[in-house]
Image: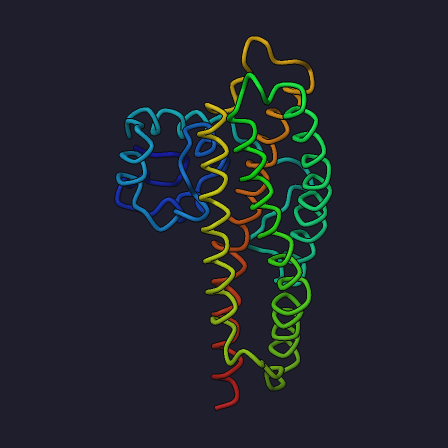
Length: 251
């Protein structure tokens, strides 16, 4: 099936489709297909895991392609410099993640106090979210203070035709590998949250705070998926390739 100028090939990876097809990540979110941590799976395999028919996904991709209209000023992440891409990740996703973690921890405690007796799954949701926050906080710190500054310096080295900056970790692939492992852990915790909340379905006796919590957790999940997608599928591969180019330029 043709989607604009893109041939939808079920043997392609989810990652490649997320990069090639406009609005693909929105379709993947809707159909509960992991395009960030599980992006290396073929479309066929990903659909089987999600319990989605490939034909249905094809229809949704076709609709997305037909309705896609580039917004004025919309960012083309693959065309950004790595420094600008990092700036976007920091300003949009790191700032949001930090502020929402603080807000949601308070909101979860409030909802548990009001509904925890009748809904014991809330206690488990609180524990899982606490673990997620405990993982994400040092993760973002390492990106902001070690990995991202190195990538920015690496890009400057290439542009200015000078040696790569000193890398205490040997090669950029090493911290990237660690960051991707931590992304996998975050993805697992997000899936646990969704399972415990029955896909964020508010029970009949849920109050406004209960509804607010589940809506906010779902938005948090979607933002973190996009956040990880930008790093795993765009920033990190380009950083590895850029380091290789800098090294070759010095040979």
